[in-house]
Length: 335
Image (cartoon, rainbow, N blue to C red):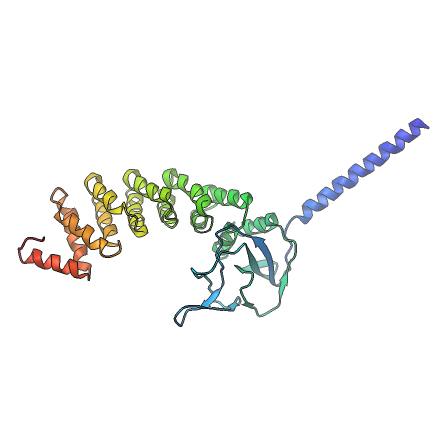
């Protein structure tokens, strides 16, 4: 009796194990996002705290009025308004053709859309499913890659952050890495900046460091501004140094004039010095004119630097720049 009972129990346990394994295998196979072969489909995802309310707008008149996004239009574009509050979720739209996507877009859930065919809204799509599907659209690279990266980057949670970090560091091609860097800083705030700064300071590819300068500057965080100045002084690539000065000036940071004044003495490369003077010319008025006049008047600087400052003063339409050049041409003291 007892032996028979153990035998039956063993049989039941074996059956349960097999059923459990089958159930697990089924769950794993069902984890992939399954989309129809044709037509529009959508699903909602939770987003990072700073996610913008992406939609379409009519910019033809003063201000901007929200309008329906015509997703099938060839030149369809989208954006956000500064006055709109961030959103906590976005709706992803994908148009499928022959089992493959040929259009991807993410919009605010309350953004009106128009499509040539009905949109099938999927329920209970997990963030993991959404991310895995978007990641699959990035290799091999296609015309959808940029849109897929933007949508991937805005997903909430550590899985999206890890995926973005991996793409920025080890993406399959240069453009994929650059787009991961761009979207990390555009939509993920301080977390995205922390991801990009190590690449900006030390990636072996100068093209990545140069692109990272632009991405870092978009955040305007204190640590970003300090990094721009530090890399501009020390990077081994003159192009990276030049671009770092340019993007530091574009932020309008208070320390720009002081940092560039120091660089104009220490920088060994003439082309970088010229780009640094150009960066000063891009400061908002009247700071740009004052900075250029200070360079032109500083006799300790190299002649090429001072001439470059005079050139950009000549390109300025500011009254103070014109008065300074008039006094200079007349042979009178400039001040």
